[in-house]
Image 1: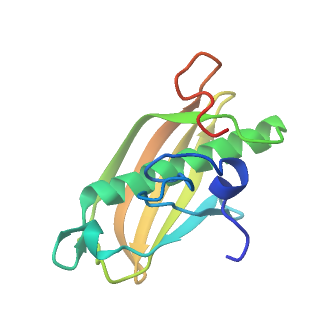
Image 2: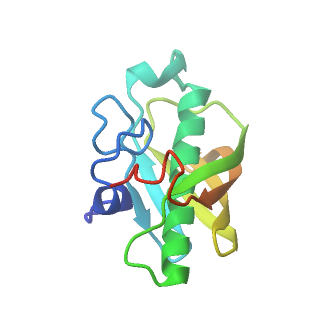
Length: 155
């Protein structure tokens, strides 16, 4: 994945903890297009642990939430023929922690849109470490309009 992720292309000034390239203390995820949606890789650091050797569930949730949100935004952009993605926010999401997630493995998260409407998308998510599914999830992400506090957050 040599090209910059969608966050760096469309929201280089974002301060979001999970996906904001401008947040020096954040996770700075880097999501890339695939034929099925988006994929990202993430290398946990020691301060992302819940207990020795295992990633904190909140970090896992943030990875899935932000990556899913971007999958929705990119899918809406493509479907609507826009030059940039609409600003989307999380309406709801859920995760299922299927097994402890090792902190010493590179994580892969895949996001696939399962339903796309004019202003929202439902996204299915899978997090793997060393080829094993550690977490799954889904979320509903909605495009916001002018006046919403998050509307200009990516610009």
